Image (cartoon, helix red, strand yellow):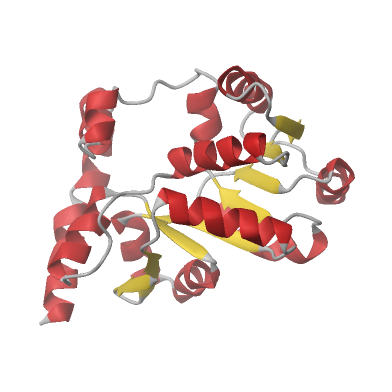
Length: 237
C-alpha cells in the first residue's frame, strides 16, 4: 500500500493498520523501519540519490505533512490522512503498553529523553521503558551494547533527520530490536521542552502554520511546498 512522489515511496496505511502491522512484526520477529516523509524531504531526495535510496529502504514511509496529502489528491491516490512522526510514536507506545512490549528512547540532548520518558509514563502508566540514552554519547559500541542489554521491542531514535535514518540503517543488523523509528524532535515535545501546536492546528493539519507564526525563520522551508506540488503535478502530466 504505497504511492510514489518524485521517486520517493509513501505508505497509505492508517494509524490502525500501522499498529496492526507493527505488532505483527514484533510477534513474528521481523525488523521494520518507520520514516516520516514530508515535501521538504522528498525535494531533498531529488538532489541526493543516497537519501532517496535510504527513504525507499524503509518498511513504512508515513505521510508526515499536509503537502503529501495534497500530492496524493493530485495523483488521485489513496492517502487520506496524515500520520505524523510524533503521533506514530505515541501510537506505538500505546500499542506497547497494551501488549506488554517495551520501548527504548535514544537521542536528543542530555536529560531530554529522561523527561520524555516521564511524559510517556504519565500518559501510558503501563508502558515499559526499557531504557534511555542521550544522543551525545560518542562511543557507538556502548550505545549498541546498552540498547541490546535492554532488549526493547521498539527503538525511537532522535538524532535529527536524515542522520537518525542513516544511523538506523547502519545499525539495524547489530541490534536485537524489531521496530525502529526516527522521531526528530519528538522527545523535546513530549518532555515539555518544546510546545506542540494547539489541537485546533493539529486537527486541520496546519501545524506548519503554527510553527511559521511562532518561528518565522521557517518561511524559507515552507515556501518549498508550492515547488513540490508543482513538480508532482508536472510529473503526473
